[in-house]
Image (cartoon, rainbow, N blue to C red; front, side):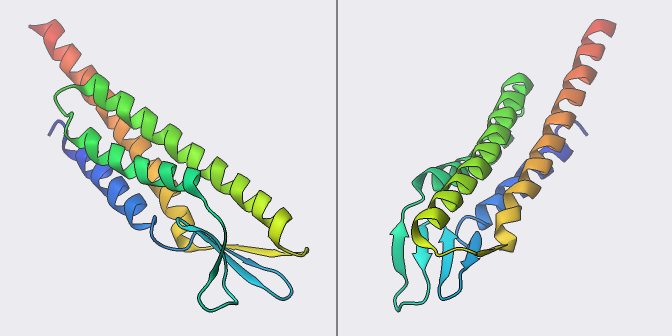
Length: 156
């Protein structure tokens, strides 16, 4: 049973956070305008086609790198120490994603909207949070497996 559950957790984390990349992350409503923050940028939605206000490359890079690392960690099942390190890096990238998302949102609201504004996070904004929990669980089980292997080596 070694390596089964963490592989499942890492796969789910990669799929969930990877699917949230291409959907809208946050909707911002001001008195007269509606803005959308997604992986392409901060868009004014009232115009046809939507008008790009600013790019969000930093958040996009972090949002794309985390699921890639989750999938990559699956293939390092023989090197549990490296797999655990990749999980830690993926967790750090997800935290950085939320920090950059908040920074982009704050700057865009100050620059492009008339206050007061209503911020409505979309469901895909929380996909990375679910992935963070799944990756943390996978890391816990990787460490548990490492302890089991070391205990068996001591017995031999």
